[in-house]
Each structure stands twice: as C-alpha cells, then as structure tokens.
Image (cartoon, rainbow over all chains, first blue to last red; front, side, top):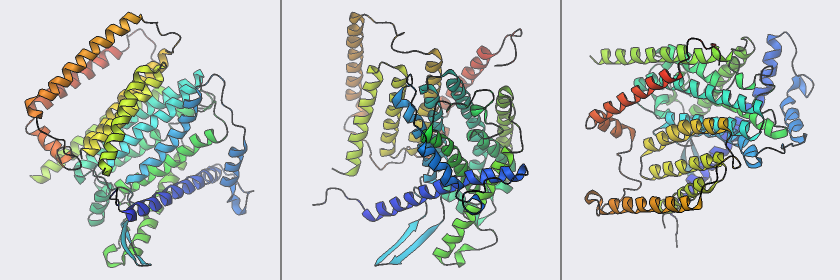
Length: 351
Length: 174
C-alpha cells in the first residue's frame, strides 16, 4: 500500500544538491576569511597569515578549531533560549537564500541504469527575487534577538543600529531592483539568467541600479564602510559582545556567508549568472556546459568578494547620521529616479 | 492522506498553537516571536493555495517589517513580566466572553454567507494568487480601491515625517 505518492528520486536529488551547496558555501566562506586577511595584508604591505600550512592555507581550520575550543559562556542574566537562537537564526537566514539561485543550467546523469536531467537549482519558484527579500528581512531577527537576549545595553544599542541600517537599505535595494524587474518582466532567477544568455548582460541596461544594489549589499552585510553595528571603538564590539566560542563564530561566519551569497546574487542578476561570455553553450554537451557555467559563476563571485574586501580596507567607517543620510536622502531618491527613467524608456520603446 | 492534507493539518496546528502562545506567554518578546511563527504558518497556507506572491509578501511585510518595528518598540520600552500591570480576574473573564461572542458571530457570518456556500478552497491549483493575475486584477478591476489605498499610504507617510521632524531648536544628531 502506498500512503504517500512521493517521487523519491527527486528527494534524493534535491538533498544531494542542498548538501553540496551548503558545504560549498561553508568552504567558500571559510576561505573568504583567509582571503580577507590576505587582501588586508597586501593592501597594508604586510604578509598576512603564513604559519599554518604552506602560505597559511590551513589558517581557517586553525581559527575554527580555536573558536570550538574556547569556553562557552552564557551570561547569567541573559535569556538562555533566545541567546542561542540569535546566532542560529543569523546562520539559517544566511544559508536559506541560496535555495533560489541557479548555480548552473542542468546536468545529465546517465549511469547505473539512472537516466535523469538534474537542474542545478534547488527551487525554481516564480517569486525568486522576492524570496530573497523575504529571507533578507528575516536576517534582522538574528541580530536583534542576539543583541536583546545578551541583556547588555551596548549590545542592544548595536542591535538597534544594525536592524535600522538593514531596514533602511532594504528599501533602496528593493527600488533599485524594481527597475531591473521591469526590464526582465519576471521574478524567477532562472529566467533572468536565460534572458541574459540570449541577449546582453543586465549591467549594460542598469548600471545605476547595479551601483545602488552594490552599495546596499555592503550595508546589508554590515561590512565596512557600513559596519556600524560592530563599531569596535564606539560600541565595544557590537551586538555580539557577550558571545563567545562558536556562537560568536556563527555570527562572524554568517557575515561571510552573506557576503558570498550577495556576490552570487549580484553576479546572477547583473552579470549573466552562469553565462560564459563569447561562448554559445548550446553547442557544448550538457555536462561540459554546466561545468564551465558553474566555474564562470564562481569566478564572477570571487571578483565581487574581492571588491567587498578591497572597499573594506580602503574606506573609513561612516558616522551613523551620515549612514542614514546616505541611505534615505541619496540612495532612495537615486533609485526612484532610476526606476522612473527605466519605466519611461520602456514605454518609449514600446511606442 | 495526501502530502497536501498532511501539510494543511500541520500548518493549521502550528498557526493555532502559535496564536495561543502569543496570548499566554508572559514575556512580550516571546509573544512577538510566536506571532512571527503564526505569520509563517499562514504564509504556508497561502503556498498551499498556490498564492505564492501573497505568501512571500505576507512574510516580507508582516513578519519582516511590522514585527521588526514591534520588536524595536518592545525592546526599547523594556517591558517584562514584573512591570506588567496585574489585571483583574473579572476583567479577563469579561474579555473572554465578549471576544468569544465576537468570534461566534464572525464564524456564523462566514458560514452563512451566500457566496461561500458549497465552495471549497482550490488547493494546489488555481492561479489567482500568482503575481501576473494579481497585477492584472489590481490594475484593471480594482484600480479605484487600489489607488485610494495608495493615497492613504501616502498620507500616513507624510504624517510620519511630520511627527518625526525635529523642532528647530533640537540638536541635529540622533
């Protein structure tokens, strides 16, 4: 008797894909910490980590081990459950966004009697871009709950700063994307990439929108020059001041995963995703096309991650009122202007 | 039972349990977090009705924006169970009775509404909640209410700016 009509093949396929993507993002985020320190070292004329392994390549493992080995301290006056939930939520929302990103077109498995076409996207939902916004708006809770549960006024203030920063820049980010969505006419990430494979990359039509999106992505990830929530010299350490051991590690790590995921989103929305320029993928075999597609997406992503780091070690931190002024008084009007111009051009071209 | 039915019962139980927890938790922060759980369960129901756009907008607007503001206010007011005023038991009973009567009336109105007789929800099918249809309907059939609602939002925004505006004598920083 069959109780549930479920295609087990698709469950296994998706589970493998999810496991691969989560492992991949964790490893990339891990090496982003190493990359960050190396980039900082180069920009500041130092050597950077070079003790653990050749060129310091094992440094992230050593850092992780150190965090795991440290004593886990939960403050007496904190709210225990929420104190643990804060970093978990930060990590969860950081990982969830990767569900709607198309990492490649599809691969064709034909062995051991299995003949399947496996799409390299966990879920191709028709509201892909909105899903990302939903998850990003959930990301605020990780910061707020963690800051509040610590029962420390500096943590709380930093959490408030972080949350209001994320909310403010979400607006400009959304409006800059509306212009892009008016051009593409779809919310599905996969369709957006396919349109770019057929025509030009969206960056050529939306340079201003991309710039606004990039600035907002810096702010959303709480990266310098917008790292007010963790301003060391003003708020001691920020919303994770009371955290120690791997719970602190989760917060710091979630930041790197966010950075990786937002780089992937920028590459997907504006730079053609898994599209390789000057190559017609349809002439290649499916698996080869998927492979070079993934490599191309990862190269674009690494370039964006490098820009994130470059900016962090070049620009000084904004003051809080400057940050809010930039978001509300410059970026939002600019994004609205971009939206109106795009709409006008679309109407004009339609005649 | 099909997977859809299992999901439906699970989400309904989650929504009801979450709503109950909103009422009975002592700590206002916990109430807000349970309310977020309720919104997620309701979004799950929207997905079951194939209204993905409504589901995600529910999460973005209610769970993502309005609840964050609630959290802001509650966290900064520093409410907790000690400072909460103890209410009279008679008040609680009176509230329960009046609220229960209101719920009975609502249930009866919904049950006896002629438009809802002999109708079942279209689970997993139907496309009225998809963004394309919703956009078309909003900008053709319901254009007047839609525009009126946007004027309402504009006036609310202007009101917020006026209230939030600093007096000229105040210092300029936060």
